[in-house]
Amino acid sequence: VSALAPLGQQMAPYACQRRTPLLHSNQPLTEALETLAEDAGFSGSEGRSLAFTRAASVLKALPGRLSALEELGPLPGIGEHSRRVIQDVLEDGVSVEVERVKLSERYRTMKLFTKIFGVGVRTASRWYQEGLRTLVDLQERNTKLTRQQQAGLRHYEDLNTPVERGEAESIGRMVQEAVQRFLPGASVTLAGGFRRGKPHGHDVDLLLTHPEAGREAGLLSRVVSWLDSQGLILYQHSQENSFALHEGPEPPGGRDVLDRFERCFSIFRLEAQGRLGAARGWKAVRVDLVVAPVGQFPFALLGWTGSRHFERELRRFAGHERKMVLNSHTLYDTRLNLFLPAASEEEIFQHLGLEYVPPTQRNA
Ligand code: DGT
Ligand code: MG
Image (cartoon, rainbow, N blue to C red; front, side, top):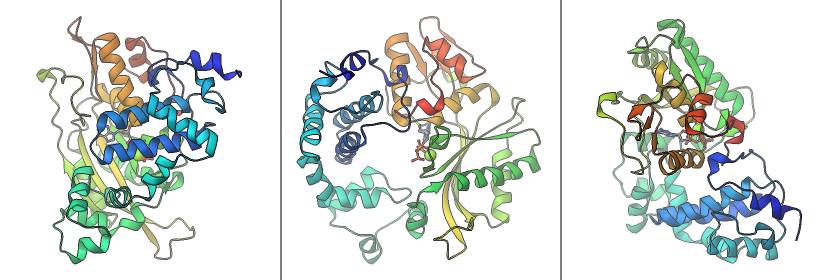
């Protein structure tokens, strides 16, 4: 038995109790498990998908490379099926099951379709059942598309080319400049994977706020209109704030509840950054703009930094271990019947009785 065994045994059960760096030593294993998680999600098996995601997440937090299944010991969150996959990859370099999934027509088609902005598992699955297999099929068979999906299809290639950190920072500056025009003192924060240290991502997540509560009202539509008038926006749709404190906390455990901030889903036209591959001179980039009142900002920042699995685990921990309801707006203590305010992410971790996990260690 190797040196990993005792370390594996110390692994805390919730991902939000662990430090998960961006780079780890078990990439082939986590890739295999995440492919199965994705495939399970494609067939609507959320439970199975979560089980594979959990197993992958545990491996990401291991301090070294796993060389034998026994080193894992009785680790929490790695089920029998995942163990089998891990064993296959360790012994043979690949898992036959995973390779079969990757080659399957269904998986490949679902992947192709869900990579269209605005297309989720349900729509992709319906198209697959109707016999559609390619992007050309969608066009030739006059498939009914939303305005969002049309934009997604039009910019398919760009939107599936990773966004570089430098590009994300440029967009952050463009938005900051627009924000300053209308509301000096307001801030723009880069969240999402970039805040966790990822060198590239699939979109740019930006949070807007102002140190004086209420001043942020009306800001987003002005900013978006102005950027649009400058020819910087290829697509956008906005959603109003629908959060109301007096409604009380949302029930925990429901769907992966989206938050209710005022928000703009958009596609920016980014001038080429003098790099290769931009022969056209510009590139389409997905950008999410989210406005948070300052009192909710730490919750929004925590909620929008991810990873998705880290967030899900934080909420699960809050509910199961603390009887609290956490979302991107507030933290509610159901035993004390009160909201717990926070001026920083650190304070939210304190309320939850969790050791602070910095963004770069939230890559669960
Ligand atoms: P990426 O963009 O693929 O490199 O990876 P991320 O981690 O930036 O993922 P992304 O952009 O899908 O989401 C960033 C974080 O924000 C993630 O933890 C989940 C969260 N998030 C995304 N959409 C929503 C939403 O509608 N509501 C809430 N509350 N959170 C969201
Ligand atoms: Mg992102």
